[in-house]
Image 1 (cartoon, rainbow, N blue to C red):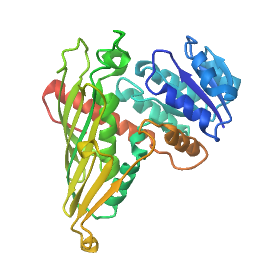
Image 2 (cartoon, rainbow, N blue to C red):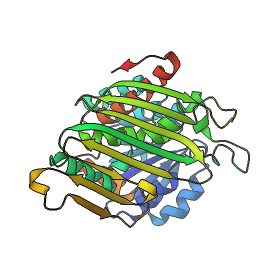
Image 3 (cartoon, rainbow, N blue to C red):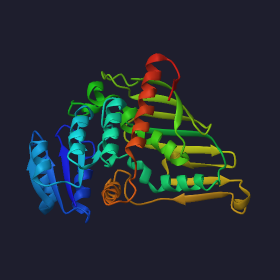
Image 4 (cartoon, rainbow, N blue to C red):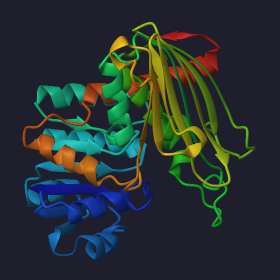
Length: 342
């Protein structure tokens, strides 16, 4: 398969992981890199080696040089929608780095275009593929926990990225470029996981956001979000840059017949308890995980490539749009002091 990788030097989020995945996956035969500035070409040559088919400053030239099966767009959020549109109009499936836009209405137009052209539009909310998320989804779907009552999540990252040693903050701390702060960059993973595990969308959002660390930024470094799900469950999320080094993460779910939790005390362990009659012989169970870091995007890109060949995608454009709408409903709630209904 041939992949077009559309990048810019100032967007460094997961670029290295994308390049490494394209280098390592046998499904990828060749890669064309597009960057208006050319600032990523040297890194692409070093990482991709013989798989690099060519480099182009113009997107139209890159798309015309060799028809891509997939375009991966890794741009600053404010710059992404126009590039995604051009790739979809050229007939490519597209994977676009989150948050992919500065407002969900921009992304909604792209979802409509992708669906009209029978193309996949994929946002790498890659936590979905974490083994513990897959197990939690399976356990809940089995009925072992009964009806969902409540969920609680936390994703806490480091303040050092707000106060970098070189003194230059990246684009994720500028509202005009990112559309928001921690919640749209990292908290969105947890919002997506909650709906993915329970297979139930969010219908109401209450939130408070702020800059508790004192940085001169116009996006939040902390968000506290309350949720109500269509299945009647309630949820809460703490999402913020609060540490000296990353990360503290956890997720808990309580149901009518049991509970599960992951990440307590930062252990990579999923624990669950069930009072279901069929599981009464062993009420408490435990699964420990080891292996690649959650930041390994290779499995996600492999699933994305396989979706281009006809397999189910790891996420649909509509599902990614749902997560973006929840994030921006939280921002609206924080700004207005109201509960936002979706």
